[in-house]
Length: 574
Image (cartoon, rainbow, N blue to C red; front, side, top):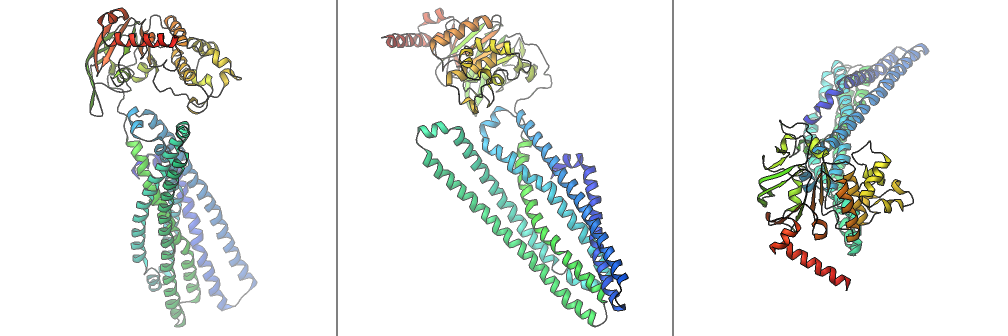
């Protein structure tokens, strides 16, 4: 419950008001048996209309008080649980936004979604109905016990004789409910992740004719989820009858022993009537206790899962010395070595990119090109002093100021399920229509967009599914350009466009990025040949560095790549 303490403290006055309502509601309910007992006792002296009217009005008054404060209790406590759910959902989302990229690499999206929906609802039930019914049971049982002891301590002893057994039953069932619900939630996360992956990969599944296989796999997982849920249902089905049995045994004892007390004249009929009504009134709190145990165990199991997210700390965050700084664009890798998941990816790499210049990086797949550029916006973090911007260690820049200065188009283009306009203007709330069109023109996607019926208001669908690969890449490039960045990083960002479109985009970029630092990663020589310098990366090391003509003269990897692509173009023309 510790993760919820800040929220409990935040709404402490609301809970205090709810506690007052609970006390008044249960106080009125506890007074009802005494009124009925007094009425039964007064029958020995004869029945009059006046007596009946007095007792009837007392019963109505207590019922009215009970009803009013019961309504207020639900309104206050359940309302607070909704407020806590709202706050906790916002805090979870805000915290998830701060977590590093590596967290999302090891956690499945469906699992995270299950936690912030299904588990959050279980925690809300813990903070609302569980607290309310527990408090009701505690207050009413205390009040009832007070009156019952006052009527007959001996009879009260018999009434509560099964209590130790009930305590053992509750502990036994509570522990097993907690364990089973944890397994259910884990299975629900697996089902959610499986469904999310299928929806996202619908094209691949259809292309490989895997619909039936995926349906069978999902059905198997769903059957396991149902089987685990049924085990919990059977357990709950045993808990409530067990509690009812204990209560029934107590009631039989009270009727048997209390009846003898009345017949022997040791107890008045009115007191015995009140005592039995208290026993009947305790039926629902005892039964509700079983439901509360279920909610409590579900809620605590879900809280553990949510707390795992809240306890996760971002691996990359601002250092103590980090400040908001303007970025000019000079980048330097100094003696850079980098490991990823225990594997050395970059080896003692030294490279300086002057501000306002263009640098192209080529190399075979897996040579570390993407890893290298990911170190610039600190998607990954190198050791201190190995990456510098404007001559300063990169950690001296706040993450916000550093990333605002970078326009990054990654290999995997991602567009949000929104209008094209919002996708291009992402992060630039003040962007005008003209600025959006200029960015689209620079990325050579304006013609395509204006050909759509709704133009810039066109919805692109989830992950931009309604656009072609080339259109998505160019829209992502426009999104990077509208930020007016000091540093532009294109990680194979033109791989899905033809060479003619690529030439048009590169010509636009020469004008747009004049005086700004540009880094290209590409397998096409046509993309990189006009860069100020070209670095060839192989096995995490720079093996060639120079201009296009200088690298051709070396007759190395770059020269081989150029000749190969030149031959492919000649064959294509034939």
